[in-house]
Length: 534
Image 1: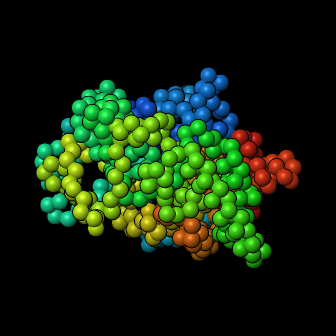
Image 2: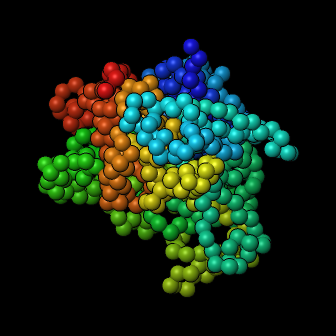
Image 3: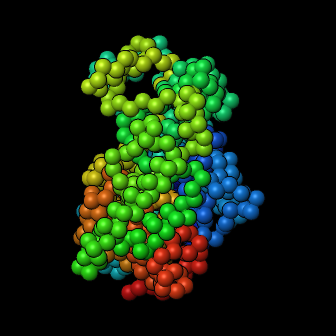
């Protein structure tokens, strides 16, 4: 019997997991990867970049880190080696088409006169429970990414029954701030402006050469901006200090703190989730949140005091105005690079906060209320993130599907169970909604998706899926500053996936362990989906 073909776009963490789990279910995966190697976003990070989550959280449930890796936060090279070992160990490489860029994907209608909305009603199980409609296929148009001239001559069209998009949020389309006319990068005629994506793509030696002896300004306060500022400071010292320019502050965890220590008990357990309103909660759980709200506030204050003790935030006026818990629920936490504040102390990193800035011929000007002098600089590196939702939208050929996939809440994509759009048939998105360890969450989603593809359970109706999505959007509007983040409710979220698959969601031994111990990848190592749910 011929195996059914599943198209997977991207060979990063999510793409590898999707390939593994659909392969286990007897499908034929084809993974399209534009780069010459696997690893996704990790192929675009400097060698000094390290994990933001502990390796205990960032690991495959059935493939632990090798004992030779002693670091709590492995670096770029170690992460890539780990991912490559995983792919080699499971025999995934033959299914990956490297240097193959996807131009677009296009859904071929099921039959004349039948719209795509009805097609997904069929796929969702509202008729016979089968996800696959024999007359509905996806066409994936690709080109050879290694061909620089006339790439259109190498276009190929691949037909698949189901598409899994694993293209991620942190690559592709850079987020460039908007500037008034004649005050953008084009006005900076005596220097260079690049995005952190382009800087990270350089070899270490090229990156050092690029910034050596130059006055460098890095814009942003997320992990990538902090890492680049530290690298530039290391290359130039106090002779040419690096200026870190930022608008918004976020709490960061000290580099010597393990997320699977006290913080994990406080924020990654079932007990911690009792202090948050949850999608679909009943009146009892809602009342419990109200009663425990003083405890949640107290925990946040204690953690903040600890961080301020470990990191000199007050000295440099870097204390965020919001609670630590707000950054947990919005996936805005970062691990402070090692020795970062030593560089600040010695003067090789200068910190500057500004609400608005623009360019002039020799550098940057500032639009703050106080009269701030212009900043002369040679290089501006924009560590301002990516427009992941734009990249996701553009991959669809259909304008209708482009509109469907565009989220209504900032950069949030409207997805059922964080995977499936209720109105786009035979397609899933993995790795777009965030958690405290995206590998861990992507593995749970890939398990769930593979079980669905095997027809292990039915999806609800489109209306029911959209109602569930709305409940999660209400949660994110309440707690998240932007984007889709399940960190603070990751146990509750995994419980839903387990119940769909017919698995026991409680993975600990004993009542107190179940309530207070943090959940991680190894808790789901022996997860066995149940029989088909009728």
